[in-house]
Image 1 (cartoon, rainbow, N blue to C red):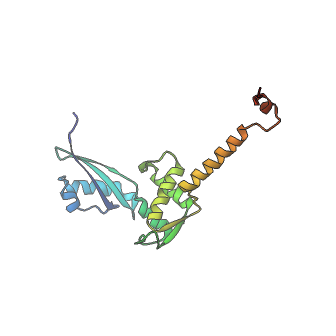
Image 2 (tube, rainbow, N blue to C red; image 1 turned 45 degrees about the vertical axis):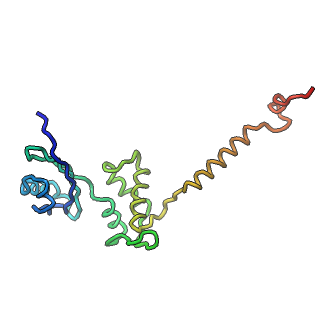
Image 3 (cartoon, rainbow, N blue to C red; image 1 turned 90 degrees about the vertical axis):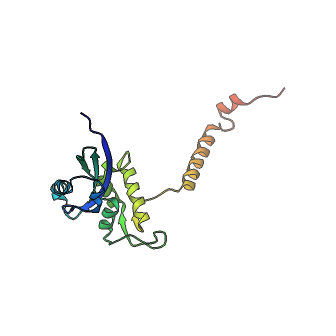
Length: 178
């Protein structure tokens, strides 16, 4: 028999440190039971913040899925900083390499909306930039640069399509006036 879902709740706890409290009270589930299960499943993830999606059913039973550590936390660890910038555009607080962004993307791949590792790494790089952390080794082509390179490519293709004067193709396409 299929259970009816009453609520889906997203929470975060440090690994092995889930405790009954206000975050769980609003869910209406057996808090000690959830905490014991969560703490057992996160024993191997000490030192991490663990996001969790809890599906709560009408009969007050629940299921939960553990996610990977938030990208921001992984980026701060890689950059060796305590927190992101208050003003990411003007104040940079650290840096990571593009290879580090790729490593983080590999860890987060299941939770990201990306088709391949490069796309996932760009998502991580964007998160880092929004935190005031520079990503070294990443070349980002702006829309104007992309349009300009497409125009140059188009121009070359068009130039190649026009036959040179005196060639067989040019002679065949010339028209004579009567």
